[in-house]
Each structure stands twice: as structure tokens, then as C-alpha cells.
Image 1 (cartoon, helix red, strand yellow):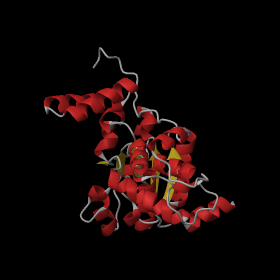
Image 2 (cartoon, rainbow, N blue to C red):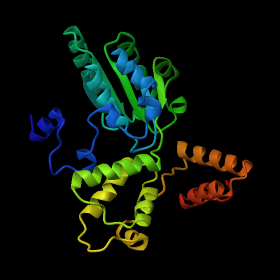
Image 3 (cartoon, rainbow, N blue to C red):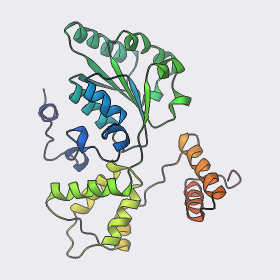
Image 4 (cartoon, rainbow, N blue to C red):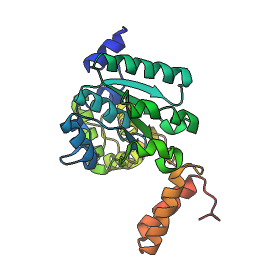
Length: 284
């Protein structure tokens, strides 16, 4: 086992690990922004308290904690955590994972199989999960940024609960910044206005916020940076927008609702975000 593996197994991250890894929550109580699922009375919290996990799909934007929640669920329920990615795994990898889970089950050990980007598996590959889920050989936790109703088999969805993770709000992002400052032992070199701009730039993505913060912690500056100076250091983030994916339909729907609801600020935001993402003005 490598030194990195030893750190990971002990729940301690190497001192040279990225800030986002060093601040990864060690318990479900430390996860921010998902209280509707993990807080008192939340559906995932109730599973943990009952000591029995059901298969589930975690649907949400990047940087909202899908992988972290899956790992902490296994830890809290006493399951063996096993992770594969639909981007890098094929049939052979799936067979190996299922065989390992079968052997654990024979030894009395439950397995939580976390499948990242589960929507990348084709329909036939998704069907391959069904017998192992039905027999209880694995408890499946899939993560996706795409609408499961469009991207996943109905048979797989019928055997899983779909939980929607929210984009992190300003309060949750500020919690991450406070933790980052405590970890680094110093405050971010930003004026209050620049701090707000940093949070807005993250656009609900906690991992991205911490990545930007790590850059700022490394600066040698005598005075706090204002908004203009911050913009000069951090590149403008490309908008989270893909004309062929779910984000397009979420935004056009939000734009329509804001226009019908006479909310000019929300309408202008949606319009600007879609145009910046390269949307055809005729479509709008």
C-alpha cells in the first residue's frame, strides 16, 4: 500500500494534498449545503440512523459533494466502499467489482458500490447492475450531473431513490472559506467586496471555490485585494453551460419562469448566462 493510500485509509490527507482534499469532510455532519438530505429528518440521514442503506442516485452539479457523501455513507453504515468511474471502467472492471462484492457478502461484509458519472454507461451496461442490486450483493450509489429520467434505465431507477443535491448557496460557500482560513491559519487577502465576488465566481461549486482560494493563499501581498485586483489574478470561469445537456433546459426553463413572474434581475441573469455560453439568440 502506498503512502497516499495509508493517509486515505486513516482519514488523514497528505500535507501536500490540494486544499479541497485536505478539507474533505470526515463525517456527514461536516457536509455543507445539503441539509434537505443529510439534516435532521432528511431521507439519507434516516437511512444512516436505521443502519441500512438503499440504492440511490445522487443528482447534482459538480462540486456539491456527491463523492464525499457516498464515501461517508459507507463509513457511517459500516459498508465497504468501492468506487468505479463510468468514464474509465468497462465490462471487465464491473465483473471484478461484482465478484469482490460477492466474496465480501459471503464473509458477512456489505459493499457500497459508488459509480461516478453513471450516466456514461450505456443501457446494456446499466442493465448489468440489476441482478446484483436485486440480490443485495451491492448497494449501488450512482452520481450524475444529468437528469436521471433521461439518462438512466427505468428498471435501474425503479430500484433506486433519486436524491437531488443543490448548488451550494452563499452561506454554504462562506462556511467553506472559513474552514479554509482555519486550515491555512490566515485570512484570505481580500476586501469584503472581493470575498463576495469570489463566492459569486464559484457559482455554487465548492471544489472550485477551494481551488481558487488555494491560489489566493499562496500570494504574497501586503494589502487585501479588491474586486479589480482579484479579477486580474483569477481567470474568468467558463459558464457551466452545455447546449446538448441538461443545463440548457434548466436555464431556459428558469428564464421563462422569471419572465412570466416579472423578475427582471433573474431574467437578465439567465439571458446573459446563456448568451455567454454560446447559445443561439434565435433560440432565446
